[in-house]
Amino acid sequence: MKITVYKSYGYCFGVKRAIEIVEKTLPKEGKTYILGEVIHNPTVNKGLSEKGLMIVDDIKDVPDNSIFFYPSHGITEGNKKKAEEKSLNCHSLICPYVVDIADKAKKYEKEGYKILIYGNPDHTEVSSLVSQLKSPIVIREKDDIEKIGNFKKAVFLSQSTQNRKKYYTLFKEIATSCYWEQFLGLFTICKATYERQDWVLEHISEFDLFIIVGGKNSSNTKRLYDIVIENKKKGLLMEKWGKTIFNKIKKYLNIAIISGTSTPKEDVDEIVSEIKGRVVKNGSSVNIHYT
Image 1 (tube, helix red, strand yellow):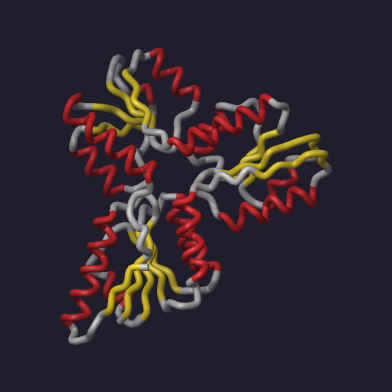
Image 2 (cartoon, one colour):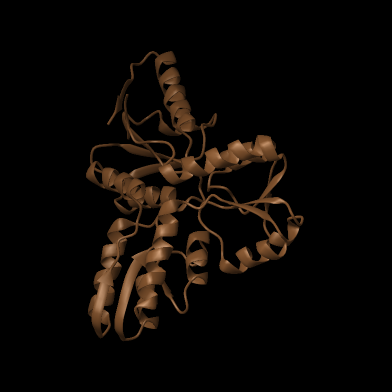
């Protein structure tokens, strides 16, 4: 068996920063609160909860004057205001890149541009961005383009964890479907996300199976899995190693492993180690490459 691991696995900069801030704050402050998950990885969130981080679904469940984290994907302006009203001691975990996207969108809106956002309207990052603008339009699929109508000038940007290829496809569809005088594309998919997508696409024909490691509710992780399936290749999306996994993959001889940007490096290392141990135990050899 040959296993190829995409070398830039583990946390991206924004996720690593968020985890470090939480871990440094928890021992000093004791019980702290966050609205929604720190990152989209259940194992990581569970570990932080065990250390005293309280994950709540509604800001009303946070006691007044408490230590409070803005999650890494963002927070709506409405919830920021509620945090102020409750006199919460707020610490921002929001990825600097996500903050930069919002700053650019607000800048263009002030200059009279209509803001078009490619993304999932239910995702925290998108709802946060929408709350900071006057009248943006969220585009998730081609059918959503109908609600744009014609415009004098607009900027098309993206949720940071979306699909690079689809961004360009939707940009072209908007450009050819609407009447406009000025239409700008602002590519805002983060580098750590699109580089992993590009690697999968570049090597899509080389492997029998792609193992995608990460939270099943993680947008960028799901994008990697979608790319594999859309290209009619075998894919397995897993959060961590499990006892039944080896039976699902043992027939494949050429396997690629890649992680989402909110996946701990240790989770990938564990999967590689477990596969290697079982292959060797069965009397076969295994070659592991990092590329």
